[in-house]
Amino acid sequence: RASDFMGQLGQDNNPDWKTVAYDELNGHIVPPCGSVGFRWGESGQWNIEQKTADGQAVHLRLSLLETKDEVASVGFPYFGGSEHPHFTHSTHDTIQRRNVPVKKITLADGSEVFATTVFDLLVANYGIDRGLGGANVASSYDEDVPYTPAWQEKITGVTRKNVIAVAREFAVNAEKTRGRSMVILGAGINHWYHMDMNYRGIINMLMMCGCIGQSGGGWAHYVGQEKLRPQTGWLPLAFALDWKRPPRQMNNARPGK
Image (cartoon, rainbow, N blue to C red; front, side):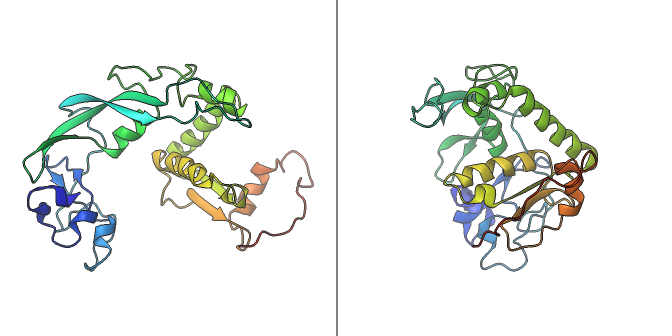
């Protein structure tokens, strides 16, 4: 946060609520516009433009992999190993230690700490082998490491082959269309206890495929009260209407709020 640094990085308004990032243009830590600290008390700065609070253009660094000072071992919680009467569990450590690229930074009180980017933490949590060494990382989809296609196979019953195929098709389409891969969702997962985790998984996939904010891509949420506008284009694909008619659908009650 801006409040952790000398002079609060020039932020007097809500510095506790302004996140920071590395600027590739000058190598400094900057408070880019868009965090919740810009929402209140400042006009016209709650946006995601690639600028700082004082209007300077920035290019934010996604990862510290190429500019790291050191490699740190970070512990990530794993809950899939807990035995449950209704769900399949796996035999993995409850703390998954994985290596993360970090930089040493000096705070306002003169102390030195290690810091990394959100993206570096994200891919470390997924167990992706980025050449940093250490255990609990996967070099292939067939390794039984949380959260590989092979790992999920015995928990969900979905074959790794199908998981890999759908993931590749979604990502390749997003790449070829500049982000026009869409997920339509709603009450089917919205009304379940762990729906927030399902939502986060979908959001991460859309984010990493560059689909957020793209016309024809991203997140289309419906719960029954709204007209499903993308349905006309999706029906031939979702229900194989180019193979056989009539559509395999049925009338049902519309869910309420």
